Length: 215
Length: 215
DNA sequence: CGCGATTCGCTACGGCTCGTAGCGTAAGGG
DNA sequence: CCCTTACGCTACGAGCCGTAGCGAATCGCG
View 1 (cartoon, chains in turn green, blue, purple, yellow):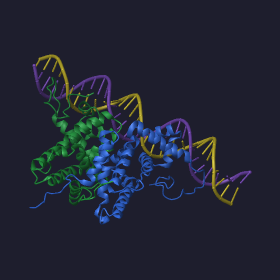
View 2 (cartoon, rainbow over the protein chains, first blue to last red; view 1 turned 60 degrees about the vertical axis):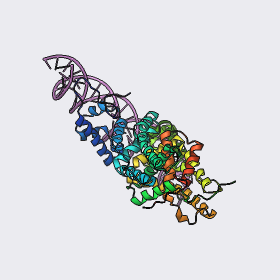
View 3 (cartoon, rainbow over the protein chains, first blue to last red; view 1 turned 90 degrees about the vertical axis):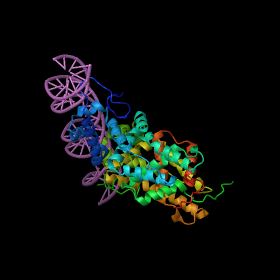
View 4 (tube, protein in one colour; view 1 turned 120 degrees about the horizontal axis):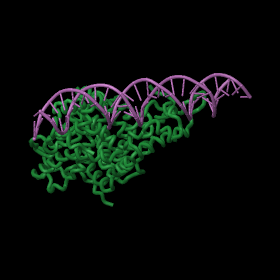
C-alpha cells in the first residue's frame, strides 16, 4: 500500500537502493509546485498534471514517489507543520498559549496550508485510512506543543498535577477554534483576536465562578 | 448568477410562474438522494449523475434547480442545520451551553452532515463567493443560538451586560472545537466529552485565577 | 376548452482529471 | 563496465461536470 521509497514520514534514513538514485531537487521542486498551485487555485487547482508541469518533471515521477494526490498533499502539509515551535520560555501559561495560538494562526494564514488541510480533512470524512494517516502524520505530532506547555506550567507551579489539563481537549479547542475562525473569515487572525481568545482559554466564559450549582 | 426559481434560501413565497410547475416531490427526492450519497460515499461520492439516478429524475432536472454541485450541497446542509434549537429553558448558562454542544455534536455525528460541510468549506478556501454563501446561508444563521443563550444569561443575572460575551468568538470556540473533535475521531461525541468541554468553556484552563500578572 | 409556457426525461457531447502502461533513454553504484 | 533504477514521453481507460437539443408531458390562464 505504500512505497518505502518516498521520504514522507521523515522517518529513518534514506534507504539505499541499487540503481539510479532519485533526484532530490525534483522532490523539492514537486513539493514547491504543489504548494504554489494550492495557494493559487485551491484544492481543485492541485492537479497532478499541473504539478508535474510546474515542477518541470513528468507525471510519472510524481506517482513514483506518492501513490495519490492525497499522499502528495500530506507530504506538503506535514513539512510545513513540522516547523511549529514554542517560543523559548514564556513567563507564564498565558504567554505560552498566546504564543502557540499566534504561530498556528500564522501558519493557517497561508492559503496553501488551509487549502491542503481542509481538502484532506474533507476527503477523509468517508475514508478511514486517509483519516488515520492525517491524524498520525499531521495532527497528532503537533500535540507535543500542548504537552510541552503543560509541563512548563507544572514546573512553574501554575497547576498542581499535569493530569489536570487534558491534552486532547485543549488541542481540540485551540486548533479547532483557530481553524474555524480563519476559514470563515479568510483573513489572518488579528492580534487583538489572538489576545481575546487566549484570555478566554485561560479564564473561561464567567471570569469569577461564584454560581454554586446547587440543586 | 442565480435562478430565483429554486427555493434554497427558504426566503419569500414560491414565485408564481406561468408554465408547468416544478415537482415538489422531485425536490425532496433529490435532496434525500444527495444526503444518502454523501453518507455512503463521502464528498467524492456526491456526483450529479448518481443523485439524479437515485432520485429517479434526469440530470437536467438537478441543474434546473441548482447551478452546481455546491449549490445542491448547500441546500441539503442548510435544511438540516435549520432544525437546530435551544432546549426550552435551562436553569443556568452552563446547562444552555451543554445543551447546544450536545445538539450540534449530534448533528455532526451524521456522516452526510460532516461530509457536506467539510467538502464545502474545503472548496471555499479559494472561492470567495462560495465562502460568502456558506457564511450567509449556513453558518451565520446558527449564531442565533449564541445570541439567545446570552440573552437568557443576562436575564438570569449571570452576566451584567450582554456585551460581555463576544458572540463571534464563542461561536468559533463551540463550533470549531466540536467540528475538530468529531472530524478527527469520526465517532459521535460521548456524553462525558460534552460535559468536559462545557466545563472548560465556563471555567477556563485555570479555575482559580491567582497568578497576579505583575511585571 | 385550448393555447402558450415551462418542466421533464433522454441522449450525446466537450473538457477535464486521475492513475496506469509501455517504451527508450539517462544516471549512478558495485 | 554492467546492472539496476529513475526519468521523460505519449497514450489510454474510466469517471465526472455542466451544457445542448429534442420530443413529450403538465399546468395556468384567457
